[in-house]
Image 1: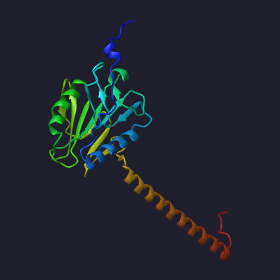
Image 2: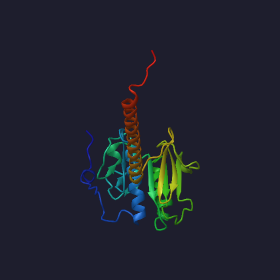
Image 3: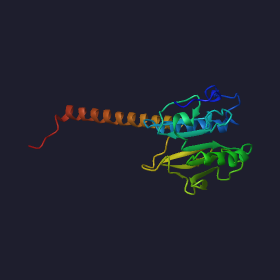
Length: 226
């Protein structure tokens, strides 16, 4: 049996450092909406989506950690975690989103990008909700060999989704059907519209039934072909 070094077994891996999770409400909103959309999209699959939780990548070195705004990991048990340890789960995040700003620009473009490439994160997306330093607001990179190359078609091959900037949020569209992943407000509006349509159809059916009943009362049953 392989002996475990005492400093490895005794290492503590905190789930929080007490620092705020997002710079502004806009960044927080974009992060939470992205988390929820992808969580619903991947429901039923062997995958999990985590947000602003520590990603530990070196066993025995708890200070070596990063907290991606949103990360998608495949081939793991669904559900939340207090933190994510690569050596325990056996899988590296496949896709990472960072809600970037002028204040985090340098770190997002240098340290994190280099680290994610070393960890072999397949896709790395930067979203600038306020357009502070990314004019187009959204940029993606795909790992090719040991380095990232720009994604020019706004398509996440790993997620099988097309991404689009929709004001201060990322819009996600299925490649197989073209359908949009709806945010809660859009789901509510769609439900309201669907309910109104059903109500209208029911009223029309009731009107037709009443009209048919009046016809039968006046003229008898409708003639049938013999």
